[in-house]
Image 1 (cartoon, rainbow, N blue to C red):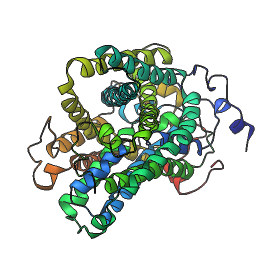
Image 2 (image 1 turned 45 degrees about the vertical axis):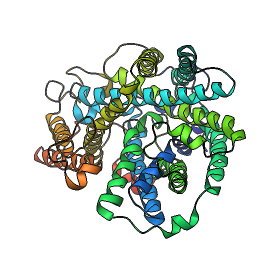
Image 3 (image 1 turned 135 degrees about the horizontal axis):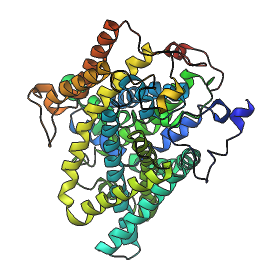
Length: 494
């Protein structure tokens, strides 16, 4: 292990405010190992709400083995995508949506970055709302009423932790996620074991297989959309400090392993629990519904676990949303963008919890529609990674004509056209309570398959347009850059 991997720079130390913004990290400040990604993504996926996905599989008529297939393929497959785009972080040393300036252009990237920022702000708000309700339930066990005052106290307590961790930054988050994995991971395991005891095994094993089109394929798309897709726009945010010689395969492997283990366990727990709680997928308060299946003496540790797991998810979202705000051109220190996002998060959560409680479902549906934009963006970014031979650090920060990524008036029209095309295709086949595309019929009416078609359309369109342009997507090759083929081997750190 090199000294570079052992020592952390002054700009990125636990429990001190991270000093870097979106500028590329120099080789002298690179540190860490790909193994830390295991803790980052494990903790981000130990939220109790993962159990609800198991209820969705059962409600769709899947049997035990079909459910296991969907849980494994959906979780691992979606985070393979996160892992691969994460490799770009150690190539360029910059956050995800800053690296995105390379394919889209310094101005053309504003659209994808805005979609990413809205998505992160929205989901961190929803996560904090659910965590605040769990904390409110915990306060209720202590005899405190669920009045607007205590609702607000619960919200501010949860949001305060989330903002604090995001404000401190990368090194603190890695530390927090490791601790959360051990503490809340073990507590979650205990809860899972208690829930498994109540499984009706005879009913479970006797269940016939469900349909493969409207059952397996449809729910697979839902699991993918609800797990890795929501994180694909953040992957490089947690790899940009890794040394250049870090193995690409290790980055992908530890990302996938860290996310897949808790997701599969929680999803399958939901499948087992559904034998006794068939309404799990449709309940309006899944935290309370799951808690009712546990012994009364476990109520306190259960609610603490629920809050902790959700905080470990929201802290990554607010950190990345702050970086997105910088990539949009906001000229502030990084920690100040986290504070801005924190205020927006609290205001939005307070509105939903205290004023318009019926706004929650349509708001969540709107955020699900943004998956079409994220997947179309990911398709362009992945194809660009395959074609690109590196990132020019100075061009990632310069936004004017001197940038190597200025293209035509700051826009790479090939990438932008491919992205918009993917969004249109995705929306045509998307069905949600908030919006339904004209082609969302048959299997598309009960699934999230629209974003899959959008992903394919964007990838194919960008590749074809890049080939028309000679397949050259970068003006010059920076020293020390590496190609996507490195995923097949190489690298020292693991």
